[in-house]
Each structure stands twice: as C-alpha cells, then as structure tokens.
Amino acid sequence: MKGWFNRLKDGLSRSSTKLKSGVGGLLTKRKLDDETLEALEEVLIASDLGVSCAAKLAQALANKRFGTEVPELEARAVLAEAAAEILAPVAKPFTVDGAHKPHVALVCGVNGSGKTTTIGKMAKQLGDDGLSVMIAACDTFRAAAVEQLAKWAERAGCPMVSGAPGADAAGLAFEALEKAKAEGVDVLMIDTAGRLHNKTGLMEELQKMVRVLKKLDPAAPHDCLLVLEATVGQNAHNQVETFKEMVDVSGLIMTKLDGAAKGGVVVALAERFGLPMHAVGVGEALEDLRPFDAHVFARSLMGLED
Ligand SMILES: Nc1nc2c(ncn2[C@@H]2O[C@H](COP(=O)(O)OP(=O)(O)OP(=O)(O)O)[C@@H](O)[C@H]2O)c(=O)[nH]1
Ligand SMILES: [Mg+2]
Image (cartoon, helix red, strand yellow):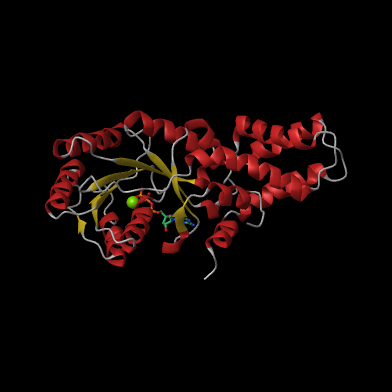
C-alpha cells in the first residue's frame, strides 16, 4: 500500500499541477518584481486560495527573495511553508472526550458532500482505536440512505440505529442517544440528510435535532461536524457560513480533494474561519480519509515531496 503522503499527493495532483504550471510559468528566467508578485497572487487566487491568503503567500516569497531570480522549486517550497503556517492552527484531529458517554458527533453538510461515507470511515477508524461506536441513521429523508449506512456499519462492525423511512429525524436521534447511553457506548455518530441552504424545513430539522439531544445531555452534541466537498471550491465559504448560522459547527472535514483542482480552498477556509480541519478525504476507500496535517497538506498542494 502506498503511504498516506503519496495518496494525498496523488489526490491533490489536479490542484498541484495547476499551481505548478502557474508558478513555474511566472518565474522562469526573471527576477522577482512587483509585476511577477501580482501575477503570482492571481495564480494563487485562481487556485482557490482566496485574496487574503494569496497576498500572504506572495509576501512570504517577496520577503525572502525580492529582486532575485528564484528557482521554481524553491519558490514552491516557500509558498508551501507560508501555507502550512496558515494551516497549522486548524490541524486538529477529531478527538473523543472520554468524559462524555457517549461523545455525540452530529454530522451535517449539503447533499452528496460525503457525510455518510465519512461517518463509515470514521466509525471504522475509531473502532480500530479501541472505542465503541454507534451510528444513528437520521437521514430519514432519502430512502437508500439507511441501506448505504448499514453497509458501512457492517464494515466498521458497529451497531446502527435506524427508523422507518420518513420518520422524525430528531425523534430518532433522541432514541439513539438513549440507547447509546444505556449501552455505555463511547461515540455516537449521527448521520443527517443532505440539505441545501434554501430548504428551510431541513435546516430547522437540524436545529430540532440539537434541541432534542440536549434533553438527554445538555452538552450534546459535543461535536457538530460539517462535511464539505472540495469540488465546490469557493462555494465552501457559503456553506460554512450557512451552517454556522444554524448550528454550532465545531469542525470541518473536506472530502473529494481527489476530484478537483480546488484544494487551495482549504487554506482559504482556515484563514477565514479558523475552524478545526479534522480530516481530509482523497477517495472512496476506507483508508482515503485521514487526519489533517498542515505540513503534509501544504507540501502536497504545492506538488512537493515530503
Ligand atoms: N472521490 C471521492 N469520492 C468520495 C469521497 N468521499 C465521498 N465520496 C463519494 O461521494 C459520494 C457521496 O457520498 P455520501 O457519503 O453518500 O454523501 P452524503 O453527504 O452522505 O450524501 P447525501 O446523504 O445524499 O446528502 C459517494 O459516492 C462517495 O463514495 C472522497 O474523498 N473522494
Ligand atoms: Mg448520506
């Protein structure tokens, strides 16, 4: 099996290829001047890093090498270092607080962002770490959702609580927490229906789930994870804002970094929201979701070796 660094690097290859050719094209046989720096910022913005991060990264390069000819590889190394600095404060793995029995993680996000798959992968990984996990299939909206989650629960070897199609999601979340408490489970992961920000009904349902969980444990949910897919690029900003208005988003998970040249958005989100980035996904397999590492991510994004 390839190491995680290679998986991430391969996954991010669309993003890094774009950055590599952009940066390389600018720096060949010319000194780093204001014009080049401005063009560099544009390349970074086009790679979804956002205006503010692009300026920071370009400034980092200017500080080191203004007025000199910079070999492309060195330039990318400096940019990666500056990106890693922005990412470092948000690189916090998902942790389970043993004081909570169970630690409740509510997982939300727009349609198809990767919530169910991510829960499956996390359940398996947490189980492998020796924790007992229970999954609540509170996506009662989509008929095939329970079946999909059941497959993951089986793979992870953990119990799943589900209800009839169309059942009240909040009621089911309540039942699941009751059961998880009674059984002394370590972690309860709650899958929810994908929602679009314009569907107020579904958004309100999410708030209702939070309210109902608090009846059994005033501190629950202890985590509210927002799953984002990288393919949406800049739209991820809107998604974070919308969900933050509805629930107390405690951390992010970014999936599908393999599917888009938009990996730079992770840096922009880190800078703008400062929310923990718990994990990143670069594929559909179990081992394709891993804790987020600032250095490794930044180097991979810039197409560099570890
Ligand atoms: N390439 C790639 N595909 C992924 C990744 N994560 C999830 N997927 C795929 O994306 C599709 C949607 O994932 P789901 O987990 O069903 O997404 P969801 O958010 O639960 O979707 P809804 O419940 O319909 O809102 C599935 O085919 C997953 O296998 C990833 O990191 N990379
Ligand atoms: Mg789902």
